[in-house]
Image 1 (cartoon, rainbow, N blue to C red):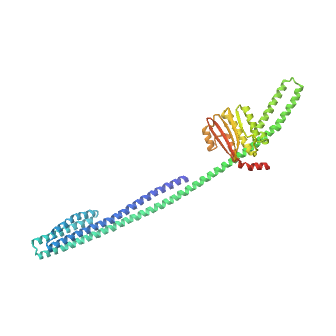
Image 2: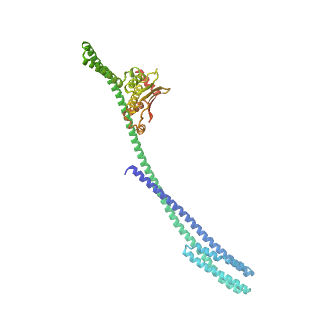
Image 3: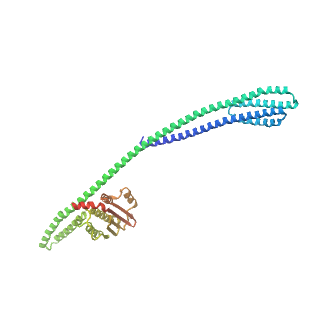
Length: 445
């Protein structure tokens, strides 16, 4: 499995574990709420038992008050009427416990018995106010009933406490289990996130290393390209010199010999034709030599070489070229002059081959901090896809544009190309502060 797949698996597992942690936390909160409800339920049962006990006490007080002072019978009935409703409420609270329901039924029976004895005592008082012996008999019968009621209520309280303790124990166990699950899932999620982080870090490091390798290779390729361009310039200069000094001299010597022979044989048409061909060969050799590397570039500088080249280009191609160069321009370092001249040469060649423009404009300006060369045509323009590829990747642009870009970049400048259906503008910008040191160095050489 690839590191990327492992990182995805670790991340997905961590997310699932976090969801499980959230579920465990939810269950824990629910259990806590259930525990609080159980405590509240027990308190409600105890309060209901207390209310019922209070009602029975008040009923007893009302009966005693009537028996002693022949008053309070109506108060007794009012208080006794509350007992059935309180019993129903108590049965509702304890419906989830069969034991409590059984005790509630017994309690209801005993309370009804107690209330019946109380009513009988009141009725007996009404019929026989002086029947103390009868009242004592009823009191003796009421005493076990009251004791049973108290016992049943105490049993219900104890049963409710027992139920509460058992429920709390179950809730505590579930709570501990939920907390353990929450802690385990959270710890596993943290571990998986750490694994995912390490895998991603390793992948990022590998990617950075690959990118650095690609950048190193690209930089090496650029250096190689620049080196090849310099070697090409050197070969052009050497070949131009050989053409001019060697082949050119041989052709001139042959022409001189033919000229002397032509004086002896003025009527020889073949000889005149040979002399004419030699004249064309000498001119063509000189043109090729100058195109490979103009001698004016080394002798007089960029301005003179540019004027000579533009004039010859306009004559050969038929393209109308407007040249704007300062009349008195100081010499620049030789690499800079050569780089700008190659940009000018390549731009005009592209205009003639691809743009098919009938006119072109060339402008060379020296500002306070830079020198700018602009070559503009009014032809078909560069296709948008090719231009975007050249700007972003430097590909699909051909050797000419790539060579121009590498030359300018190697010299610390910037090449910009703007193109549309109305034409193309090539701009080469060189910072002057980077030119001073090479200029001084060349002057020292």
